[in-house]
Image (cartoon, one colour):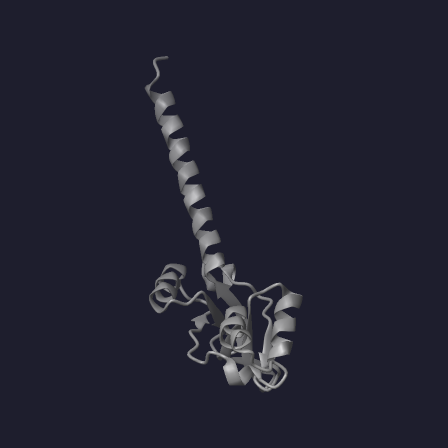
Length: 151
């Protein structure tokens, strides 16, 4: 299993010249807490940055900024951690934790956007693995008990 198997393939995205109000609208439409800021190159979307709902609230709304005058490019985070689509899940979890990143765009070998990975996705896959391991242990214990019973 790799990142492409667990990431979300529908990504809310905008180009950097779009207004922050449009970013908030896209987050609402897609029921997500972020938009990936992209540049379109040769028909491909290449991630440039990310803008989160928290960025909007903490950095703009709290300071009474005029959201209709600010572009996504003005306030996006451009220190972007991207993840290759064939990356190892455990390595990716470690790197996201180390960098304090909750969401990361997933890119193909050519750098084009193909999904977004969130800590929620990683928690879900981890909990499924733990559930399966627990079921295996329970099954093995039951088999061991049956083998130890006198016939």
